[in-house]
Amino acid sequence: MPTIRHYPWINHFLGSPTGYVVHLQKGVVTHQGVGQAFWFRPATSVLSEVPVDDQELPTLFHALTRDHQDVSVQANVTYRFADPVTVSARLDFAMRDDSKRPARGREQVATIVGQLCQSLSIDHLATLTLAEALARGNGELRDLLSAGLASDERLVTTGIRIIGVRVLAVRPEADVERALQTPVREQLQSEADRATYERRALAVERERAISENELANQIRLAAQRERLVSQEGANARLEAEEHAAASLIGARSQAEQRGLAAEAEAGQIRIVGEAEAAREAAALDAYRTVDQGTLLALALREAAGRLPAIESLTITPDMLTSAVAALTRLASHPAGSAGSAGSASHEI
Image 1 (cartoon, rainbow, N blue to C red):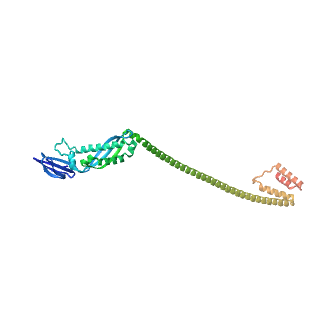
Image 2: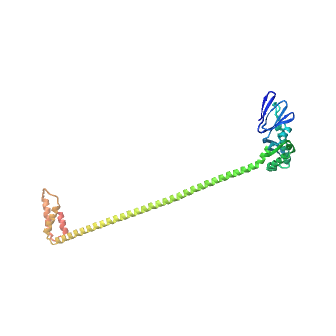
Image 3: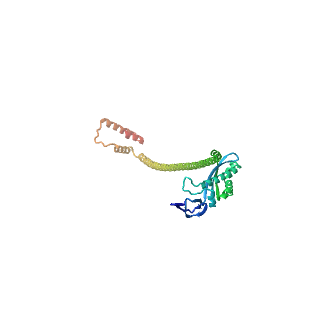
């Protein structure tokens, strides 16, 4: 920004590095350039400051395509004042103390460039359909505006040089744009749904694989458990059979031992019986050669040995009579058998 110091009847001007000042005094250029500093009389001087840095001009306008669709074009134009003296003479860049009348040079440039861009774009978009304008409108409009603005006679004679043009967007109306976006959105939504379904299907497949693995593990464990139970049963049966066989062997051994003991005892009894029989036979053989009196005496001795002890004995006449009668009968039968003798001894 330039600086103007006010003094009585005279002022001092100090310019900026980006402003080209043109000092006219009584219609004659007395000072011009960038970064000027000078004194001037406000009553006879006119100051104009033209910016020499790059200027950015955004523009927005509407146009109709060949199929009668309204589109909006958003562009940005970069320009520079190549001839500040000519610009100050053609456009209003005057510096005034009266703030009610500001400089209108930038507004004039914006109007000129904007109208020119709109005119060129309308003519070009009228030859394209909406689909073509949306597909290749940006690049074609950029080249068209760059060439048209750079060769425009009014801009050239005014001292304005176009540095660059950028077309930012070519867009249809909102409802048309939504309608055009619908198929793409539907396609993207379909792809998103398909990806979701595939992801779910993959998750289900993985869950199924996990379930199958778990089931297979359970089947393997059940089979192993079945083999374990079978093996345990076989071991138990084998143990029972071995125990039964051992018990049978023990029982047989005990039975054999008892049989041997019984046979031994029977043999002993038989031997003892045979010995007793032999002794009895020998005794009987010995008794056959002994007379009756001797046998009677022996019988009485044996009977007396078996009788209980008698402390007192009372002999009655009847007992004496019976004894004498028995002795008389023995005397009358001297050839009686041993059985008779036994009977007689028993009677006595």
